[in-house]
Image (cartoon, rainbow, N blue to C red; front, side):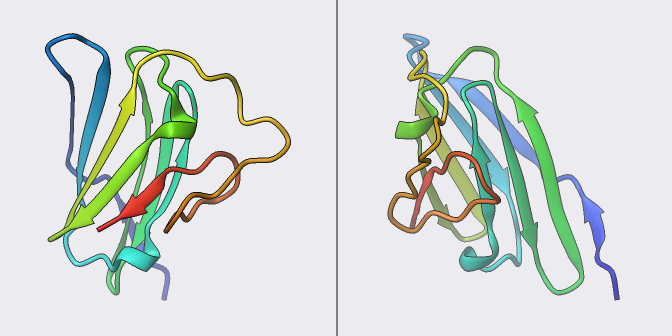
Length: 113
């Protein structure tokens, strides 16, 4: 049976100094190990299946972020991603998975929690 794809609830904001972008994504019922997050300098792609449906989204950022230094936590159905604004270049030929990261290719964000 194919899962229905739905867009999750998303809230994104910058800090008062406009140096850090935070993205909060609601993923109720999703297991941490099923979250696939792909970060780029200007966007992210997310896939997070659960038993009855799959949360999917692609988001464009307001400004470039240092995606290779991005961090993410997942607790109680809320995925919180933080990245400093600015550019740290492209993924290159050797994207480095960080601790707990999962991705569908490309760059990774560390996923803790």
